[in-house]
Image (cartoon, rainbow, N blue to C red):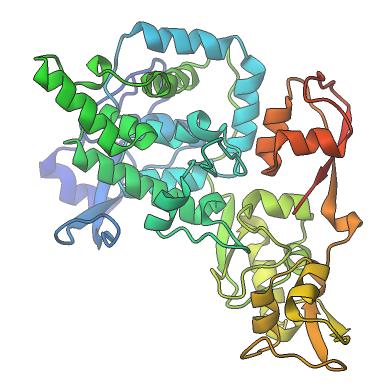
Length: 448
């Protein structure tokens, strides 16, 4: 268990004045879950939490926590563990399941690296258990493009309707469920709401996140009617939900006891990986990547929500930029006029063409042409010109990606990564879905 120096109330004022640094966490040697507020968190200011989407009767003041310095995100994460410790055969089963695939544990750490610091910021600000920062492992294996059979999407696997309820915009241009910034805020807000719904029982809250509040309430009523316990471990739940909490607790325990389980933790510093930059207008994403001095592939690791080659003309107007490059990006952005943030070509309207035909030709939408050309309706004339964002023109060069198969990859894994269907990958490559993929094999992935 992590040990911390306590600060008595009589010395609290003195502590603030002389800014002593006692109270820093020692490295955890064994896994433990605690219920009380963690000693490494002090309340330093009052803020008001936005409760507009939480359907509560009134706003309440919340205190924003501040953590003592930790060298790595792992140290910080483990110091925030707060779920009750449970001995259960299902947890042990999930631990053994993970340990059979140590390469997978390494892979999900690499995927999590760009996002963990920001997730922990949200976890701390809402004062929810640190273990929940690992929920994307269970939900999506930290793949921002993950798409389930039931159409849940993103790191936090929001269903379309739930995402919209929490303000995650979804349209032709953009899917907020894949936006690391907005979806993480929405997910932690939703989890906090669920904890209140189930009287601060985080296991029931997690079950509800997976199965829906209605289904958990139904299971609780069923047990009550039969004079049975109503805790998570006693409820009659579908198999996926029965495995959901044990799976989270299992990976939390493995990571916190990595040496005991012979698992290596990647050295991820406890520093911001990205900055949120307000761009105030639409921008071609290839131009944005150039300004950020990164490849498009690197750029989309932090900005996976954009479905086209430019941002939505109606916003949101934020981009996530690597922290060390954000100031350079801001400077270049400030020097670039809004009209120069998009690549345009002129299209001369031919006889018989309408906006629908032109939109299809350039792989764009009628609405995008209306807005881009400031048209009040769809009436156009032959001989006149339209401005088309060149990044939206559909060419084989920009519409095709060559993916190299990695060890353990399946059609389903690759399809989830690129937000496409397995059968399409098979069709594009003229191979059978039953074919076993080999490491090093090249696959064509076509992007919409």
